[in-house]
Length: 419
Image (cartoon, rainbow, N blue to C red):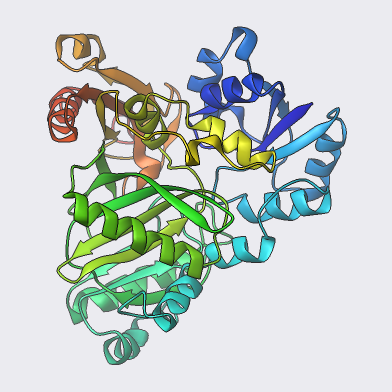
């Protein structure tokens, strides 16, 4: 039997392959750009290798053709936001286990999710669609107020997000959104979906890492998230598991279960970002997948279990064993820091990698880019060139270790000025 993945997150293929093989299945990746997975493909080898099919994954007919060549296809994995709707549609079309495509479409629309939760009393504010032009500022002031957040309905990787605190900043952000809307599609140009405004949430940012089956949700842990001070939000670091008082953790588990049920998420992993405000948790966004970057790696190490086995269980249409397993953090706490390019250019390499083993915490380097890659954007996660991961007895100490090590790593780029 075969399990296929329609694209994937940059990290986790090796663990997914091991989980698939443990279930007695071959694991195949369909991708339009295997360079995205260069680190995972270089380390996933031997009996737990990943078979790769190169195909235009934006072409539904090409994907159907590739899947038709696979013997005894048992399930279709999707761990990305971009391909979540196509994967759900294909799974239904092929008679494979999978989520309701309509529920997936709702979760891919951040504005619809916000409005749905607001109507259910689970979000203090609502979402208001706005035209991406400066003269929309008065509408935002009237309906949402300041401070506010502008974002796109189907955005990913913190792209096209503006936090505005005053009228001038609001008009500037709307102007920038209008310029981007002039591009085509949701790639390097254009906005990925419609622009909307929502109230700014004051408080620290976290994510709840959850697993659901038939409407029952289990909280696997809470991850801290540090963002930049730039107007366009950029994630800088994360740590797992956050040590919260038992009563507060129980309250968050109850809240996130209600949020996911209201949004129609009934099975599989979810990565739910929220701000812990003075009134309690308030949703930022829901990603109906396992956490990206090194979030899942952190869970695997801390919980001392391959959480991708639950992904395989759900893909095959069976209750994930992780829902009922004892959940004790027997491994180390984990933190990671994203290393960004300071300016656009062609990546030549990094300085400081040779010195990482001098730092405490079993420090590891996870490259996102490779020498020769062009880095065009540095204001969001597309500018990340790699991540430094560290372990410690607590998430706080792991964060300190990862940050201290990451400050010694610097990307070297050939810029236009250097010719």
